[in-house]
Image 1 (tube, rainbow, N blue to C red):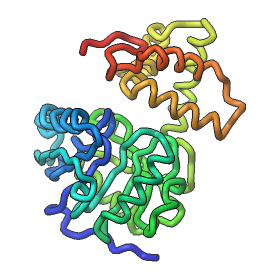
Image 2: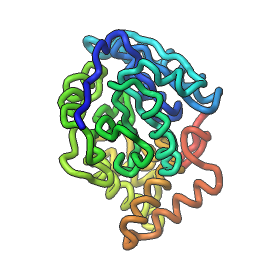
Image 3: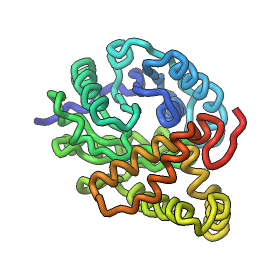
Amino acid sequence: MTFQLPQNLQTRPVTVIGGGTLGRRIALMFASGGSKVRVYDLSADVREAAVSYVEQTLPSVVADREGAAAGCAQAFDDLDAAVGGAWLVIEAIPERLDLKTTLFGQLDAAADDDTIIASNSSSYASRLMIDKVNHPERVLNMHFYMPPHQNAVDLMSDGKTDPTIFDFLRDELPRYGVHPFVAHKESTGFIFNRIWAAIKRESLAVVADGVSTPEDVDRMFVVNTGAPAGPFRMMDQVGLDVVLDIENHYAEENPDLPEGPRRLLHEYVDAGRLGVKTGRGFYPYDQ
């Protein structure tokens, strides 16, 4: 089945479902392209915090990027109202496939006929989320990393995605300061995350085995690569609960992966040390 690409993008909002660490950053990038962005979250505190993050961070992003323009963000507590009229809806909820499958059925029913519906999932193919979707030709993975500093975006088909969507998004997404790359076949971890998973997992293993410490691994990584931060700092930014969910998913697909990295993550998650969002992970943070 073919899909009618969305029209009148300049007058239509983008909707982000989920206002957590990545959801609010995705909202920021679309707002930096002059768009109205709607943020839906079940938690009033989370959606309001997401809007505040966009409002506080947007001026510096606009100032730093040529051609950027300040849009705005608004919090929504009603899913249908948040989705109606949007040209693009991006799901950024926790990495639970049962939740995503239910949500995608709701989004497909609520969205306009020409709305593109995307998942920001970092580990699940959108193919796994469409059991309750009537129009899978408009669904795909659109995986962001950590904007506004890591601005690559993976695009991947659900197996039925209309091919015209990829060319359309290749043209449109750079207006918002993000750079799309298409996975040419289904890939757990997409493109860069497959590479990053190996780095992250081996870093955790080095510490779990008692060979080194998070601090030393990070310092060596920065010295040797010139990167601004090492793997443990970056995991703290993402959230160690999210990192553990992703590692568990990889382990389900490949039972031969070592258990040490997941055991180490469990120690931190079970202690409530989830990273920046809780004030302490591998490192302490001011709240």
